[in-house]
Amino acid sequence: MKRIEPLTKDADHRMGQAVEHCRNELAQIRTGRASPALLDGVKVSYYDSPAPLNTLATITAQEARLLVVQPFDKSVIFDIEKAIQAADLGLNPNNDGNVIRIPIPALTEERRHELVKHIHNLVEEGRVAVRNVRKDINNQLREMEKSHQLSEDEGSYAHEQIQKTTDKSMEDLNSLLTTKEKELLEQ
Image 1: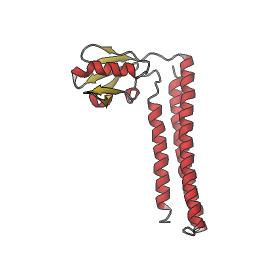
Image 2: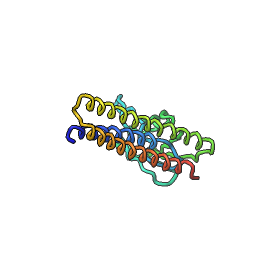
Image 3: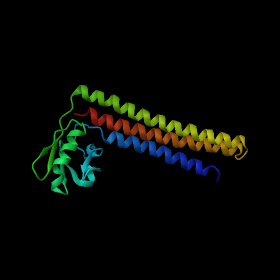
Image 4: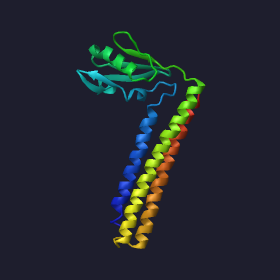
C-alpha cells in the first residue's frame, strides 16, 4: 500500500486545489449582498507596481448593501477608487477623503439568471478538472499494474480510493453550486 499512497495523496491534493479554485472564483461573483470577497481581484497601482487591494486597506461590509474600504495610507485613496472603477465590477465607489463607501446595487432578475448560468459553467470547469485528475491518476495506476509494480488487488483498492476522493470533490463542488445559486436567487 506504500506504493499507492503518494498517488492517492497527489489526487487528493490536486482535486482539493480544483475545488478551492472554484470556491475562489464563485466568491468573486456579486450576489447583490456586500461581501469583501467581491474586491479580492482588484489590483491598485501603488508606487507604480500593482498591489492587491486587501494589502492596502481594510475592507468591511458594514451593511447588507454597503462595503467600506479604509486605506492604511490616505494618500492612496484616489488610486484605490480608480482601481475599483477599472475592475469592471459594476460598482460606483464614493470617496469622502478618509474612506471609500461602495453601495452594492440590487441585481435584476435577468442578471441573476445570467449569473446562475455563469456559476454553472464555473462549477462544470471544476468538475472537468477533478475528472482529469482522476483520469491521470488512474492511468498511472494502470501503468504500475502493467509493469507489475502493483498487484491486481492493490490496483483495485487504489482505484476505489481515487473514486472516493473524486466523489467527495464532486459533492463539494455541488454544495458550492447550490449555496451560490441560492444566494443569487434570493431577493
